[in-house]
Length: 166
Image (cartoon, rainbow, N blue to C red; front, side):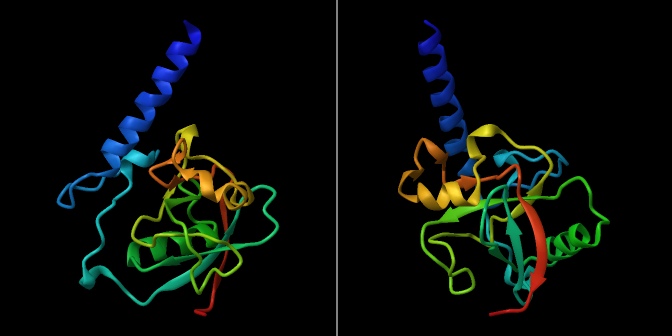
């Protein structure tokens, strides 16, 4: 009986993530300080909202190499800079949707994060938590039961530095 409830609960979480990740583009973004995958905007910012890309490195516990993220949204760029300066102390962890191929600016990994889905969080649900090295080692399993919807929210993530454009 306990196993049935565990499977049912897992399936319910996966179904909820899949449903919520397909939010229509006209939906208003959530503004809660405690983010879950349900608060991530999946619509692309308008061209007027985009600026020159800015790159940052991040790490997770036990990851031997830094991971480069690309931000194009001016508000998220400002938020990342506030994290690095120590002004932002709550929403400091990085989350976003995995794209299973390397990016020119992040050649050390076989995946990167879609810049249009990157956001910052304080707490998130467990189903999207993993380390960079674990995702790299299990990339073929990602986007199924492991990291449903390709959504990655590493609890131990932290921004390290702003880096020059490649």
